[in-house]
Amino acid sequence: MSSIFSGDETAPFFGFLGAAAALVFSCMGAAYGTAKSGVGVASMGVMRPELVMKSIVPVVMAGVLGIYGLIIAVIISTGINPKAKSYYLFDGYAHLSSGLSCGLAGLAAGMAIGIVGDAGVRANAQQPKLFVGMILILIFAEALALYGLIVGIILSSRAGQSRAD
Image (cartoon, rainbow, N blue to C red):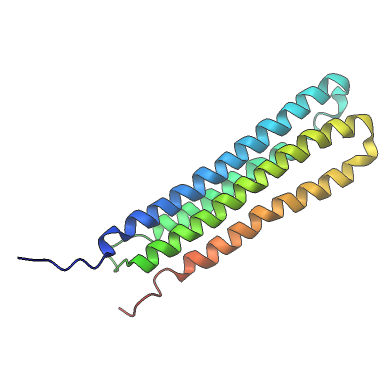
C-alpha cells in the first residue's frame, strides 16, 4: 500500500513558522528599540529631568513595532485551517514570506529607532533645536516597519490563490 505524498501535509508548518517569525522578529526589534532608547532617556533625565516626557517618543515608536508583528501573526494564523479549506505549499510559503517580511522589517526598524532614539534624546538635552530632526529620522525608521507590514499583508492575501477548489 503506497500513499501519494503531495507535500501539502507540511504546508501548515511553513504557515505557522511565518506567524511565529512575524511576531518574534518584530518583538525583538521593539525590545531592542525600547531598551536602547530607554537607556538614552534615563541618561538624559539625569541632566534635564524636565525633558523626560518629551523624550519618550522613541520608546513609544519602538513599542508599536511589536503590534505590527502581532497583526500579521493573527492574519496568518486565521488563514490556516486545512480542515475547512485545502492548504497547499504555495499557501504555506506565502504565509512564511509574509511573516518574514514583516518581522525582519520590524527588527531593522527597531534597531534604527533604538540607535537614533538613544543618540537623539541625549543630543536634544544639549541642543533643543534637534528635536524636530530627531522626530523626522524616527518617522523614517518607523516607515521601514510599515513597509514590511504592507508587504506582509499583500503576501498573506496571496495565500489561497494557488489552485481553484
